[in-house]
Length: 271
Image (spheres, rainbow, N blue to C red):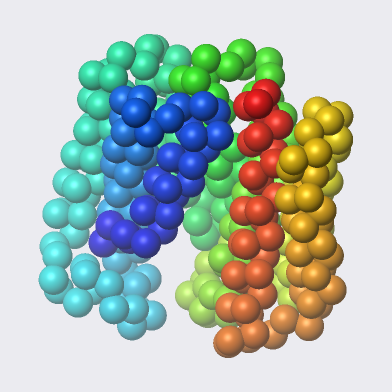
């Protein structure tokens, strides 16, 4: 119900971004950030299971609510408690009003996806906002000016949308059969694959331009690897089919997008 693997991976990504921004292991802010992010992810995950209980039951997915292991009310309570906990930790950490507001926006994006956008062509929108918002929030906590962090949305939103499409493509047929019209369903095949690869290239190119302007040769190599991976994904995207092939394409694109995000965050950090 808490979707531990994606929740932990997102939390680790937040901790990694904090390290890039200069918030070290001995800094209490790092652990506050990780705890807040984990609670936010748990809240979104629990609400997702609550909102999708009927669909999961129809599709035969082995989730706690359809299996009768957890009543729907418990999932809803967990979602609310974790959300309140995230706000409470942000307040106790004394991160300030702006940081608290950003936590609320990120949480609202996740809840909006669960309750409204998941089955529509706008399913990408919460991801396009929330994913770059995470390093933006961390950058502010690290003392960076907001004006220097806007580039995270310029490159991060295309990368986040590409990751969302990559994640949705393997489930496209099941979503269509369930009456959902996600962006992957709306774009069809190979439209979704081509759009995902194109967005990956856009985000990667933005990252490389920023790196070159920054003049940091230490991460140019990472950027070149990222663009090479992006081109590889583009070359195979039209031939990605179903089953294991779709999953392979998904993880290739997710890996390339994650790699592309690293120099983007490094550039935004000013280090």
